[in-house]
Length: 171
Image (cartoon, rainbow, N blue to C red):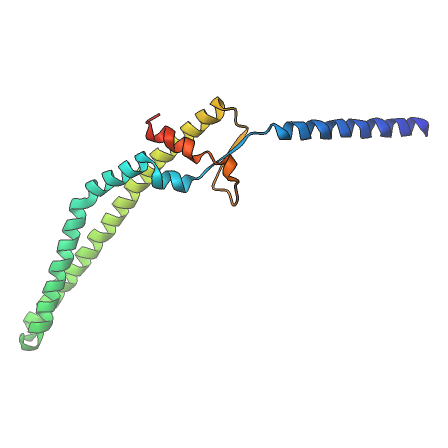
């Protein structure tokens, strides 16, 4: 019985030492938080990517707007002329309007798909660059953990500004 008591006391003592060691190491834990929404909104590379995409797709966007305006004007002319048109002309113009509308919708869908694809590509590049910078920062400043998009974070662990400066400086 005495031996069992000594063994239990040894286990309890070992557990207390382990708890003390964990508590001591927890005090030294260095944690950071990065707000990725802010990175995507406020960083110079994000703004540059947005401008690049705007320029890349501006011509197609104008063409689609022009095509939409032409379709609208043609539909208004048809509505005005329809009561006095012979049935064959009315049916032909109705088919032309339907075909114009179908073509415009197809072109708009392709435009959105192309734009979304390019946005994903630009976003992916920015996220990869940001991840590399965050990893470098973690290694340089000896962070144990860096999280993104937390439900709650204390402003004292927010390192978003450091990451933004590094991104904006082209590192």
